[in-house]
Amino acid sequence: MQHEYPTPFLTVDIVLLSLIEGRLHCGLIPRLNENEPFFGAWTLPGGFVRPQEDEDTVDTAKRILNSKAGVESPYLEQLGTFASRSRDPRGWSASIAYYALVPAHAAPRSGIDFKWLLPEDVLVRPMPFDHRDILQQAIERVRSKTSYSTLPLYLMPELFTLTQLRTVYEQVLGGELEPRGFNRRLLEMNVLEETDQKMQDGFRPARAYRVKAKALHQAEGEFVVSKGS
Amino acid sequence: MQHEYPTPFLTVDIVLLSLIEGRLHCGLIPRLNENEPFFGAWTLPGGFVRPQEDEDTVDTAKRILNSKAGVESPYLEQLGTFASRSRDPRGWSASIAYYALVPAHAAPRSGIDFKWLLPEDVLVRPMPFDHRDILQQAIERVRSKTSYSTLPLYLMPELFTLTQLRTVYEQVLGGELEPRGFNRRLLEMNVLEETDQKMQDGFRPARAYRVKAKALHQAEGEFVVSKGS
DNA sequence: ACAATAGTGTCTGTTAGACACTATGCC
DNA sequence: GGCATAGTGTCTAACAGACACTATTGT
Image (cartoon, each protein chain N blue to C red):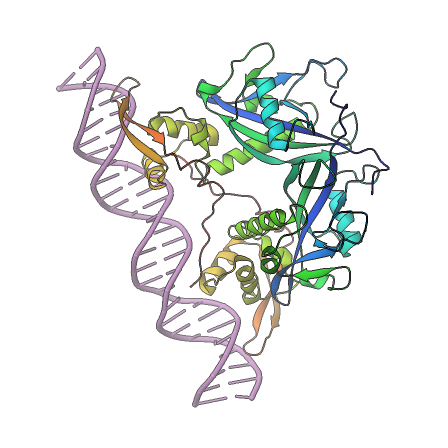
């Protein structure tokens, strides 16, 4: 009914996160088209929804990650939609934002058309569109989810030690954690599977764990509700 | 660049929630246009984004709530975006879903073009588009937020007793709560302001409270993160 | 006086933080 | 043996659930 006006255009932007050299980084790409705004700037990977190719926006996100960052379907979750008349100089637009986590071993290398950067370095300066807001909200979301879920498991390699896992949590949360409490909590969550293997970083070797097959996509988004009598 | 294809159309749908006769209801409207799909069915209030009128999608949501339900800017938060080729028979579409809470005294009455219904009654049968998913997710979101925040304050009138507030929490969560623990927790949260007034439902009068001015939009979305040493 | 609801005192089991302690490897 | 890291035992403070108790009204 409202088709007298031009429809806003619809894009997808992705906050791609991984651990590079032990620290949480986000992946950015350069804008290479001279006819588009912010030519030359580094931004979140994104692009238009292609109604012919994409069944939904998860498809869009995967296609973009694949073509612009060379990443194959990692953990992917919708962050929210950023839509307004002014966020894009070309006109009324809506961007459905996703965030994605990839383990270090599956992460593409920095290069001429893709770069890993520390979010804190990126956030101190402006970014094209409202990508700064998007990145900020993604980091906050990952932090808060990390504090009550097992989200960081998506950043881990096949085998890892509890100390390595704790270090990842510390990186994401930006603070130290008690080893005792951390181990207790994670083992009680019943998402890790002991292996016979050991891994060594220099001194006493540590037991290697892997993620239980059923564990991923399970404990996410669950809250403890105080129950009545 | 991708403008060879028709752009998906962009809509906003709203899950409007209120307490009607003490129970959590959602507001639905009938589809009255014979030329549109699902003519005659009851659905979530929604409509197209109007790029000329709306600065952003919060504007859209407020405009729709106002025109279709007669509700004036209540608590409004984005739930998520539902976008795919198949969700609307007219073609590729994206719906940015919001949920809204209004206090009972500001809630419109059920009538010919607006109806309050119990979510559990609505959810047992199919709905047009993917409105069933949207409603379901909204209810879940409100429940989970209620368990760790003060979201239900947006459902309360100016003055209320602790027992009334607890009853609202119980309605939303669908279970009983310990009065002792509930009172302690809410008073410690420091969001309520004592008044001198008393309210009475039949026996001993109870102290009336109001929401502290600063309290709304404060304790939302905060998590307790276990801190390190 | 008694019934019914409002509101408080307080016991207890559970849990998270803290930290000392043992275990296992390298040098 | 000494050192560094892995991993465990256990004490304690804080807190949530439970429930008995007091307080205030109507009938």
